[in-house]
Image (tube, rainbow, N blue to C red):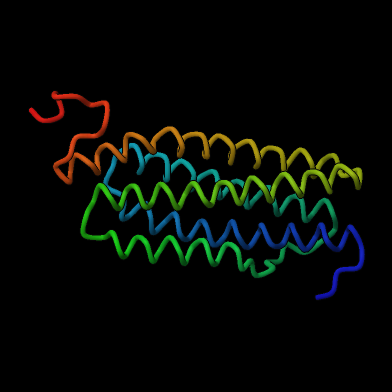
Length: 178
């Protein structure tokens, strides 16, 4: 579909993130089943609920714009999901390592979503769509919070993977060997 106006670009981007959120929701449902770390499982479960809310907010944005809530296939989301699934299969035999892979894949997704929402917000602001801006900002806020959780949990998950391999993480000292 050719894009000739800012409004068409905006609706295309909205449909793109709408598809991405659906793809990421399905991927999260797979991830939560394979994750072994309790905190990671909790974070994913929480984000599944948030993603469902985000999809609803996107549907509200479409309605405010007088547009059909329709998915535009998002190749970037497909690539991120495919990469995550491939890495999960490769690490499937090592639970703590699999948790690291899942968390890393989630981080990549969050940053894609953050960039997408920031761009959409800028477009909606320029078009004077304040109600749409408010909905998109709510989604962006959740994505930023989730990205922060993912980043904060990374060191703990990496330490667990190292311990599972029988190695002490740097800075853990002799206590790790006892």
